[in-house]
Image 1 (cartoon, helix red, strand yellow):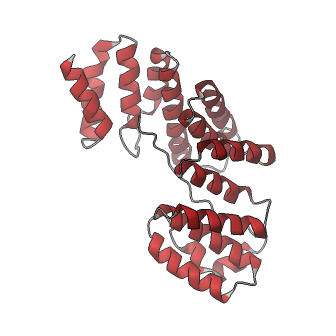
Image 2 (spheres, rainbow, N blue to C red):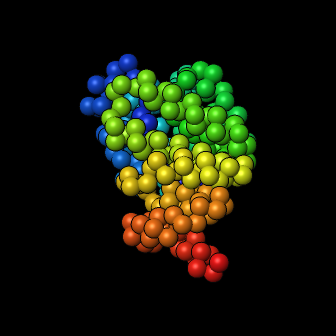
Amino acid sequence: MRHSFIVLALIIASPTIAETDQQNPCILSDAIANPSETIAICNEVIAKRSTNPAVRGPALHNRGIAYRQLGDIEQSIADFNAVLAIDPTNTPTKRMLAWTYRQSGQIATAEALYTAILDEDDHWQGWLSRCAVRTDLKRYNGAIRDCSEVEQRLSLDTAMSEESRQSVMQDVWYFTAIALNELNRPGTAASVARQGLGLPDINGRLYFVTLVGLWNSNQLAQIDSILAEGLVRYPDDAELQFFQTQWEKR
C-alpha cells in the first residue's frame, strides 16, 4: 500500500528569531511549494551572511527542505548536517534529517535516529514519524504503540488549532489502520480509519484502508456505499480504483 504522510516544514528556533525573520528572506520562502525559488534565495542569504549562525542555520534548514522536495537527497542531507554542526541540539532539524533518510530508503537509519531524538525531545512529531517508519519496517506492534503516543501528546498541545490536530490524527489513523490490517485485525482497522472519513484529506487513503478492513472482516454490506463516497471525493485515487476493480471481480 502507498504510505502517505503530511510533511510539516518546521523552521528551527533561534534566540533572535524576530531579527532573523527580518534579515533572512530564505526562511520566509515556502520550500515545499516553491523549492527552486527557495534554493536561489537561500543561496544568496548563506553567501552574504555565512558567518552569522543565527541566520545561516535557518537558511540551511529551509534549503535542505527545498532540495529534498526536488529529490536531491544528498544535498538535503548535507544541509541538515550543516545545521547540526552549528547546533547539535536542534531536534526539528534532526527530525527533518531522519525523514529524509526514510525518503532515501535508509529506513533502519531513520528509525534509529528517531529513537535517539525521542530521548532528547518528546515531541508528537517524532512519535508520528517513527510510527510511519516502523510501518515501513513491518514492525506493526511498535508502530501502533508509537501512534498511540501521538494522541496523548496532542491533548497537551493547547496552542494547536483543531484543523491541525485533525490533520495529524488522520496520519495516526492511517498508519494505525495499516498496522492493524497487517496484524490480521481488520475489523479494528476499519473502525480506526473510519474516524477520518469525511474530513478533508490529501487523498483517499483512509477510505482505502477502511475498505480493506471491511472486506477482510466480512463486513461486506457497508462496502458499496463507502467505496462510492470515496470515489466521489477522490475520483483519481489509484488505490480506490484498484479496490473497485477487485471488488467488481469478486
